[in-house]
Amino acid sequence: MSDENTEYTISDLAKEFEITSRSIRHYEDEKLITPLRRGVHRIYNARDRVRLQLILRGKRLGFSLAEIKEIIDIYGMEGEQKQTERLLELIKVRRESLKQQLKDIKYLLNEFDVLEEKLTTSHQPE
Image (cartoon, rainbow, N blue to C red; front, side, top):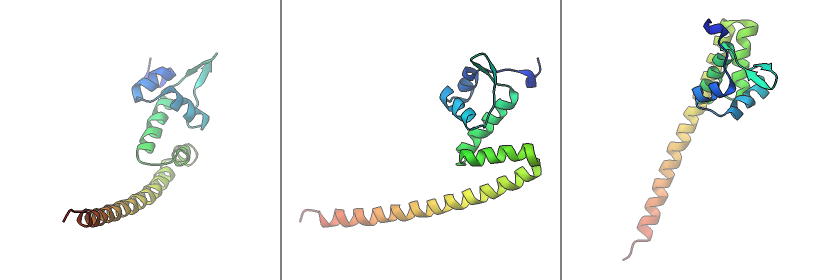
């Protein structure tokens, strides 16, 4: 049996990617993956597995499910070039957001240092 004909159960994918079956069903509800049905059982193929891998990678990078769906769907509708262009746009936006968050965190850490210093020196026994 070739890889593209390999079938997976929801348990197989949950175990492989160390996520819950509920998460996988959620991605299905969001139309990110579309398994076949055999009675009440979901049957996932290699395409679904790859899409799940892309979803999880996108989530690790901080993209929303809507953004992930857009990126995945662009490939099917407009091809790899458009997908790449859109992904680069989203990466730029995400990078700027992270840079701003980093600035905010550094500012807050400094504020905590200043406040901690004030509180420590003003409450020392004489």
